[in-house]
Length: 421
Image (cartoon, rainbow, N blue to C red; front, top):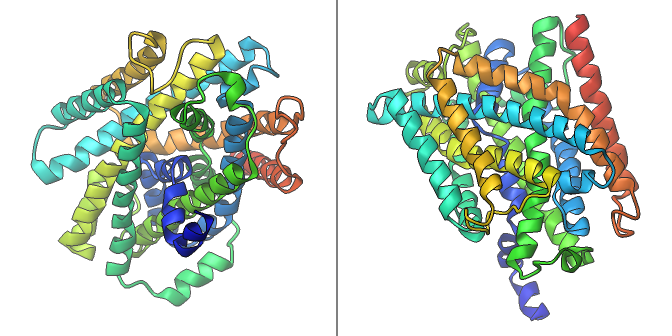
């Protein structure tokens, strides 16, 4: 068997892809697409370097969250409950839920707006169809089915890579702005930077990554906590490959979304983006109908990928805080409160669409809020990962701790700079 594995490294590579890939891909949800499009439209290619710089930062954070789930046998909130008082966890879970509801509502609006361009149905009807369909799928499909669907949905993100190549960018300028960071100038530039950091390093991904490690182990038959505690070197190595691949893919797509907006919207001084439909319509005369259709299809596809993860991360956070029965492998009759949070999150997100909001601006501000809140959560994650007793003598490496601590410090500084400049 080892000899066969060595003969088929590509097969082994694809076999280890799972939670890390879907978590990374979900980072490019409609919120991310809107934020990156705004950054590219307003600042051109000057923030392309963020895709390169945030890749290792995001990878170390997701690896730390994955290790917490694999070693403790608990989700992130469950592990934090061992170190933090419940009232503090409740505040964090409530903040996460609030941010996720806003993002779900804006994501649904963006998806519906984009889908209307393809099939012509009313956006409010499409919002209900998307919201209800996603909720029912999460409730009635089991974990391994949901994981498989999410894995395949990551393919839609290639639409943004293809779109950028259609535009034939000036690669010398693009590569210069990729490898030579430019210092943000002015409040607007700093706000864009905080929003990009907030949507790339999002709190809901921390919770989802750790909880999916628990789900993976349950799917292997490790139903009891004690059977899930600890992880082998091979398991950690496989997840490292999975997470590094997922985060690289995520940031590759992020790079090409910023580049696409810079080459089209910014180049033609179209910086005031009001809706995702406006972005797609602006692409049509500038980049052609095919590019506009690819952008639209990608927006709908990543919404289908991200919304279950947004709603699911809130449900895991609350279930672990209050010790409810939780898990996508359980029927609704067994985990009523867990699925109630998923249903309520999506329902409130649908309700937001029926209020007059600007989807892109709501998504952009949600990303900005995440950019301010994420560093506080990173400190909590860092404390858990350093606890040798809680981590079963398998704490995160010193390099991981330094990188996550550095990320928290950078996000603090960027947020402060946004307010004072």
